[in-house]
Image: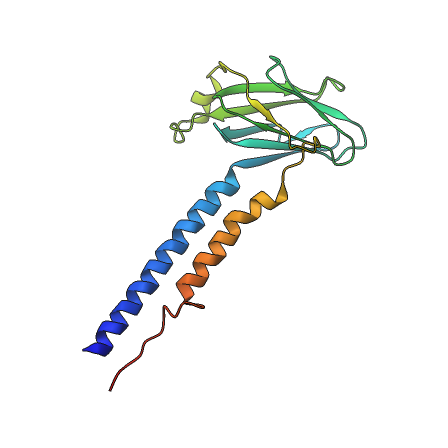
Length: 181
C-alpha cells in the first residue's frame, strides 16, 4: 500500500508539473505575440499592412542605407528611423486603423489595423472600419535608440524551461518512486 501511495503521489506531481509547463507555454506564446515586426527595405514597409491587438507593439527596423520615418497620416505618431538598422517601437492602445507613410519618401505607405482585445475573434473587416479615438503611445527606451530590450523576450522562455524542468523532476525528486519493505 505504501508503494502505491508514493507512486500515485509522484504521478500527481508529474501531472501537476506538466500542467504548469503547458500554462507557461501558453503564456510564452502570448507574450511573444505581443510585439510584431515591420522591416523597411527597398524603400517599402514589409508587411505593408499589419494587424495587432490593443496593447501590442510594433517595431520597425530600417534595413535601407537611407533614413525613413514612420508617420501616421492623422498625426497620431511620428518616429524617425535612422539608416542601416535604426528602429522605432510603437505600442497601440486604441483600436482602429492607422494608415502611415514615410515623410522623406512619400511613395512609402503602410497600414496598422488594431483590433480590440475583447474582440479577438472579430473579423478584420470589422476592425478595419473602426476609427481611432486616441493616439497610440510611442515607446522609446531610456537610451533613446528606439530599440527593443532583448532581455525582456527571454523571461517567458526561461519560465518555460523552469516549468519543463519541474515536469521532468530534475532537482525536485518529483519522479522518485521508492518502496519500503
